[in-house]
Image 1 (cartoon, rainbow, N blue to C red):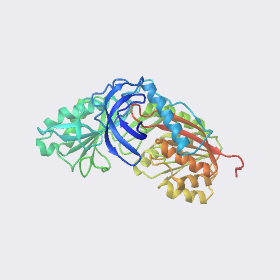
Image 2: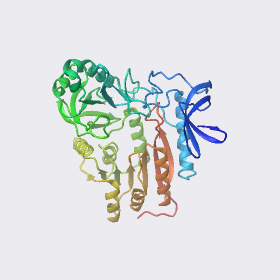
Image 3: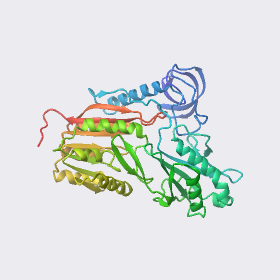
Image 4: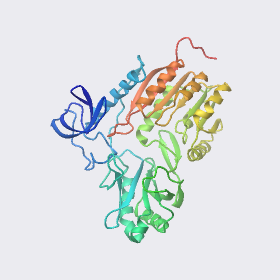
Length: 431
């Protein structure tokens, strides 16, 4: 952000410290938006972006900034949000945890498909602020196995799918990779059930070592917001990922942390701050496949988990059976629907762990969680603004944020993940 005659200008592709010419693309009452067209004096933090697609691809925003600068600015983003949006002071906010190698960290990717002028399939991403799909040379954020699957699909489609009409039925190629086992599952998202599905699945598995399963899903159109659940076409329907000492069965339909290396560090921190004892009751909200639930339940007296995704609960039950954990009650429901009912029952809960979606918890969930009167609440967030709002809500319910640790789960992008721990303020007693 820069200023011109007192007006804030948000300049895409700018780097803090640049002196630059900016083409204005939008003017509002109190601000303007633009794009950097020429850097006159570069910031000391500016570097050459290694990706040839940077600036036109919508996936990365910060490749032109040194990694240490990225981490520094993400810490400041978190501090600004907590102070300005949350209105909170006295919270210890750590420096953002970075990665030794901030590349090839993603375990999941969706390559969009369409046809070029010669009716050949191309696989890539959408351009910035556009639905146009461009042919991808390489994405350095993806696990190498995902890129091998994309390359193999491009090579095989002309031989297996006949003509543009049949090839045009391919809408996406998705990949889910286990960093632990080196295995992957590919999902072919299609319009209908084209004849190339089975032969392409077999050919992909033969061409790509490590690809152990291929599934298919249907979508109503290109770039559709939703697709059907995955049906197995060949090979395995699940793979196993590992975070520290914990193993998880995962599948293409169930959410799992996208960056396993940083997720393992985050899990260790959550367990440290949750500090669950063998007599404690613990609650895991938005529990997914059991990322936090499994290690929490292993040390707690009993655990309650709430998750609305049927696909995630299938994996969670399998993970609990594998660990032979019988002290867990699973609720398939929206958290905001079931948590107030649990609070009315005055269910004994010593620690609550919450990992909400990007929109955050919201005041209903915060109020219900506080009503359970836990000793502490550990909150995981992928958006500083919603984290600040949720922490403000918890503070209004008597739970003050003590520590926040930003974690860089998505290097080269503007996303900031964080873990926060809240404890009851003075004067609030335990039942």
